[in-house]
Every structure is written in structure tokens, then in C-alpha cells.
Image 1: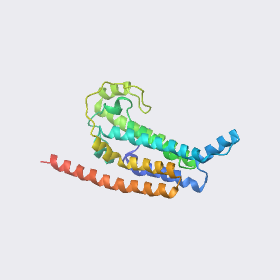
Image 2: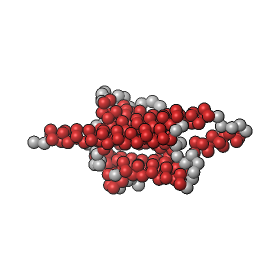
Image 3: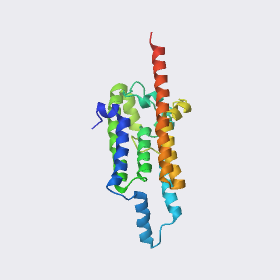
Image 4: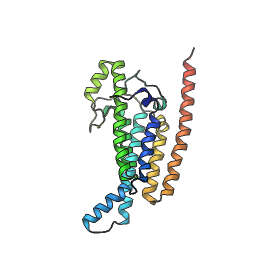
Length: 244
């Protein structure tokens, strides 16, 4: 079942709510999932957890977050960043270049990578909330968008869907390049928030200091507000240009 109009319109806040409840679960389950995993492995091996192992597991978490930012930046470079923040569903054109040759929904695939990366920062319950929540909600959004694209694009989207996997990327491109040129400045503008979120996990992997982590994470929301304002300003300017 696809997402409702409300779910699509407020998708940013719903994703935020998933993160909130995942980390709020620390009030119920006080153990970090990464720490619990390392302690479990240490008991099996009969040796204590080494300090480097804590750095290593959070470095893995950071790599998931960096992979998310990279995939989403690549995908957004082939879209308009205005599409990323718009509350309306856009179905007027079919993008089948860049990462869209490997997977139909690279941005939602990136969200799942982010869920795993930040899930390793959460409690055991929080990890499940983040990973399952991101998969289920992303899938609902995908179903809604794909139904609209099928109605708008018809046979072209049906052929595209038959060739390219929905959410798990293929190892090789399933379509030839259409020759579109990525606009990397747009990609980084639209996904700067994700890069700073990734930086927050990198900072924790290096320092194991929660204060540093939350300072950098707070900066991500400042960056988002700035980029959102820039994108909205561009959107209004482009709308004014096309009006008679």
C-alpha cells in the first residue's frame, strides 16, 4: 500500500520522527547496539573489547552514512534540488541516467543506508526502529511515486521498471546512458544536510565523544535551514521567470 498524501507531503518530518523515536528508545533500552555487539563478540572470544574496536565499529557506521550522502548526491545531481523539498509529487519526466541506471530509487536506498549507519549509534531497540522504519516508510513512498509515474509515463515507465531493480542496486547499469550531464552543485546543495550528518558520525568514530557528535549533528540542521532557504528562493525565482 502506497503512502498517503499526508505522508508524502510531510515526509521530512516523518523521517525525523523515526529518528526521534529510535533515539528516545534509550529511555527504555540503555545499551548502545554497537557496544552490545562488541561485548557479545568479546564474551565469545573470552577477551575484553579493545579501544580500537569501538573506533572501528563506529567508523563502519560512518561509512554507511557517507555512502548514503554520496548516493543521494549522485541522484540529486540528475534531479532539481527543488524536487527534494517540494511537497508535491513530480511525475512530468522520467530520469533514467546516473544512479537511476542501477536502481529506480537511489535516494530511498540511501535513506536505508543512513538508517543502518545511525542505527549503530542507537540502542538495540533504536536500531530496529531505524532500520525497519526506514525500509517500511521508504517502501510506502516508493509505491506511491511509482503508481503516479506509471499513470503519467505509461509504457516508458513500465519498460524502465522491468529493466531496473526497485531498491537493491544492480552491480552493472541496466540501461545505456542517456547522455544527461549531472549538475554536481545542485547535488551538493540538495544533500549538504546528509554530508554534515555523516560528518557527525565520523567525528564520533574519531573521538568517541558524544558532545562532539551532537555539536556536529546540530550543525547539520543549520546547514539544512540555509540550503532549504536557497532552494526555495531559486524555486520562486524560476516560477516568476515562467509566468507571463
